[in-house]
Every structure is written in structure tokens, then in C-alpha cells.
Length: 172
Image (tube, rainbow, N blue to C red):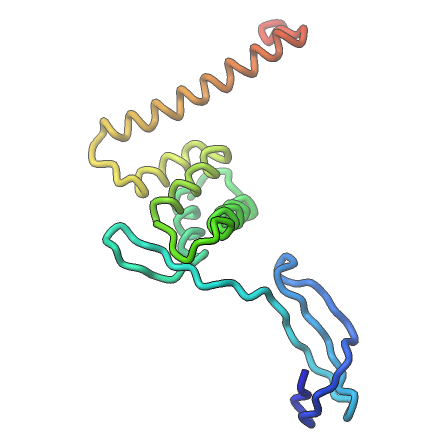
């Protein structure tokens, strides 16, 4: 690493610390020639990722756009910022694990909805209504019915497990 003060090519690392949730390493360095101390940051270089929109246009992947959409859908809901950023992290990891240079906005929306559905059903419906561009009440009703049926099945499965484990959820 070249010293910004004397331009000598040799330095030693005095201190290293992870920052930005471990995605970046902050290194404190000291020039072996003049003793000048400076800070460098090391991060993994990610390949550029393009999002293919519905109209065929392409734009660079932007985490903050996903986060803004989730924030809007979770407005006045009991969803913490940590939960929202965790969803964005999981979605980005899924996308990048595909190893593709281009990804459809449809697939990104699908991944967000998968994650949101397990966090908050109302936020999920709000996000789905924008993402799927519900044309009328019938489409909205069908989506809502799917969520309700899924919830009913989960409660039923939970009660079945309680009954098989020797407990009866109707007994207090």
C-alpha cells in the first residue's frame, strides 16, 4: 500500500476492524518509511448486477429501492428496521447466489414477497398489491384468500402437532 504522505510502497497494519456488518475491513496502517498513519478500507468487489424491468429496460441493482418498497409496505406496522434490512440482505444474497449478471424485477419481487409473508401478512399484501399491480378487487381478494388459507393451514398444523404431543390446545 502506497503511503499518501511520502509515497513509499511499504506499510504495516497497526489495527484491523470489521465495519458495515462485517462486509468491510477497516485497516489502520503505518508507513515503514516516514511513520505516517492512515486508514484504508477493504471490501469484496461485487460484479455489477443489472435488473431487467418489465418494459425491458435495464438498470443497476439498488438495495435502497427494495428497502424503500418494504418500508412503504410496512408503514405503521410492527416491522422493525432490522427486520426490513434483514429481508433486503436475504433477497440480495439469493439474487447474487444465482451467479447471473442480469435478474428480472419480477424475481426480485417474488423473493421480497416470500420473505415479507413470514414477517407480516399486512405488509405482504401491501407489497403484493403494488408488485403484482392488482387490476381489480377480485385479484386482490384471491391474494388475500391465499394468505388466509395459508394462515389457517399453519394454525391447523400447529394444533395437530400439539394434539400428537399429548397436549390439547382447547384445554386451559
